[in-house]
Length: 326
Ligand code: NDP
Ligand code: GDR
Image (cartoon, rainbow, N blue to C red; front, side, top):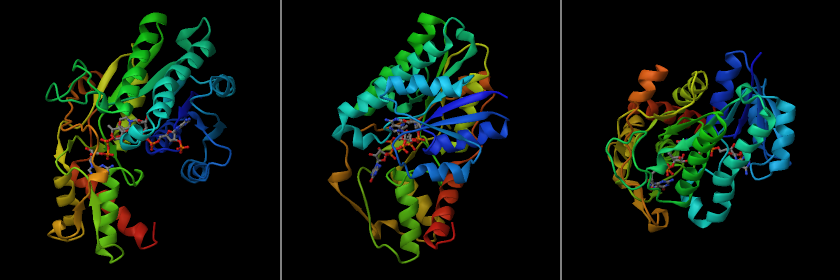
């Protein structure tokens, strides 16, 4: 039975990846921080087969103990402070967890493998936020990185550390440059879920206003369930590498509002939406659109859920949840 260790198991991607790996016959270990993290219950309910180990990305000694216990064949480093807006207010902490945390997990992996580096494969959750200021359209693996937030800068550090461990030690360390991916499990602080939840609540008469920031930003949004499949495929390759994972389509926040409000049969969202500078970012990433052709050719990966299907899936879930049925 192959063994996998997932950091960030309580997050959106951690849950989908755990489900995927369990369905493939893996023994899955999940790293959870905090002495009484309420999301442990969520993991137990969603994927009861997962074995929980406690630890923090910033605690190297704890990670070493976790590796000794999990004895993983594959390590998926998904843990991070992942909310871009928060990273300006907490830049040092974000650097520590989202940046240096990657080095800690890489080093724990290397120490665990000892002289037999082939015994473990490593996946790093890199991000399209690393592209930041628009250089290339669409963005691909060779596009210059120009991050625009402390989160993006920390991800660049983790990305290059992953490449460095591959080149320095010959470690099977791959980096997935994933563009935005969403689902009914997305945190409510991210714009897709904020919008689909508000559309559902406005439809049900539970809310009368939605306050947002920049409506002109464009994102390449896919479905998280598809994207965890790409992570697994990367670790099944004979050679480690870096891959852009994206749909190749982009949509603005206005398009998102059109789709979400259409899904609850409200024609004119502008009656409900107000913009507030509090939700504007000090530096914005204006346009993300990825070129996933390398992943298509080498991993045989392609997205299966379109943008309208994704938004409908999320709105339907939020309608049920708001009615107390989910
Ligand atoms: P989430 O924010 O949903 O999950 C983040 C996870 O990291 C949570 O399980 C959280 O635990 C954990 N975590 C945070 N701080 C620490 C810490 N100090 N020690 C250990 N664990 C910690 O993110 P997603 O699932 O959406 O994303 C997964 C990864 O992929 C992240 O690294 C993210 O940056 C990256 N990414 C995400 C994209 C997306 O569109 N979703 C796109 C590209 C990259 P807790 O529950 O305790 O807070
Ligand atoms: P992002 O996702 O920053 O791309 O990072 P988010 O959904 O937070 O923002 C997307 C775009 O929407 C604009 N926006 C708002 N965003 C939020 N959260 N709240 C608002 O009210 C709002 N109004 C407008 C933002 O300015 C931005 O342009 C996500 C995270 O999952 C990262 O961890 C991941 O690396 C990247 O995607 C790829």
